[in-house]
Image (tube, rainbow over the protein chains, first blue to last red):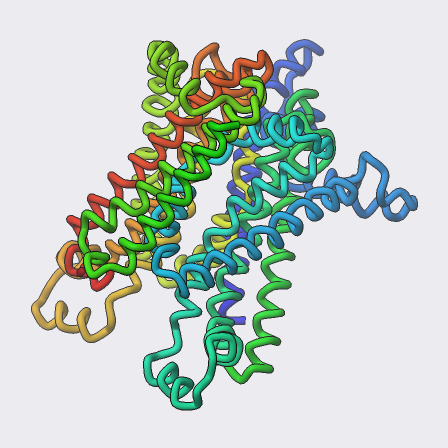
Length: 292
Length: 281
């Protein structure tokens, strides 16, 4: 309770500021409408008019929530959970690409970390480029990745999106795992040597278990990055399904409510994914006797 | 096909050289530490060239590095105009504005333990969100020119900087702060002489994350509408009109700018936080 109280207060203040903002930003249009209808609005009427526009400059929070409900919960109640107008459908598409990209990125990251841990050449040649790769704005490459995968004969949008996700999320895993695999001290490594343990045994019995806390910390960063990657992959490339595509379509058709609802759906998805990984982290580390 | 075999042979030779260098007793020399990754990168370029030339890949799909270099040399005017529009006007303005606002907000928040406890989890959560999706909204608010791009960048860099600075300001331990109190130091003096210097590694971590985000924000925002210049605009129209070498030239600029900005911040970090263990060799 002592921890959540400040957070809730801050969230309430943010909501209040948001209401204030949508009142201020939607006022000109409301006044214009009233002038056209030759009415004068009292302050109360004006405030009400700014809260329920169809195409507000800044929708009020309750409008976003109701739009979110309309495109998720209400669709489920009518039994159309996976209709193309529901955010559950688009969320599932985004989630699919995110998880594919995440799996690919984690695989590459761990593989790279193992190579870097065991080979000096790999460390010297790969590590600087891994850092450089993260300073390159991937979005500049996103359209090219789609052109390239089309040229290779991959029609589906999921593959290029997954590649972009993997590109964004392999780095935290690589860095975290290099740290984790090197976390056993010299004493521990020496002990294994006195046991006459081979490379494989020392990897699976010492280095890998020791790296688990690092792995989970990086995984939480990586899954958030993978989601960002998928949405970036959906934004500029004319995709038609997925949360990023909803944002794009909402922009083209001038429906701000749809954009905001998709943004919130993405935020909720990110929150759920990170929380799930946090739970997995707690479970695994507890089983391994590493929980603090 | 000889080109392809030549490239493959070059790759093997370069790999051999790197292996020998890495195992030799000079492997800790600065020159070797730079030469090995550079040779590795150059080998990738040679392989790319060999694959494209050897297998006769159409330039519409993947141009060879030499084609890209030629386009780069021919189109410097266009590239410069785009650079000014996207990097100098959009990304850098937004970066400077967003980082300073984030920094100042962090200083304000830090004065209240309640606000820190409330805002830090929220900030951490928001920093992990795909904020980039807000780009179309900001473009519709601030118009097509660079102002909207700068606005997107401000929103994107604000939270990572905020979170890192707040975390950095917590870095001093009570002992050190008590010492400052026994010296009779004011809040300002404690901040300037103890807490800010101690926070610098975190501040620079935030600033480094923000450099990459700034470029991403400025480029993506241009996909949602821009005047007829800018790197994002050129990339999206270039893909549409199959002017792929120009797109790759823009990507080269973007990559170079991203790396340079990051390198600059890292260099300043090295100068400012010379005392930190991670900076000592």
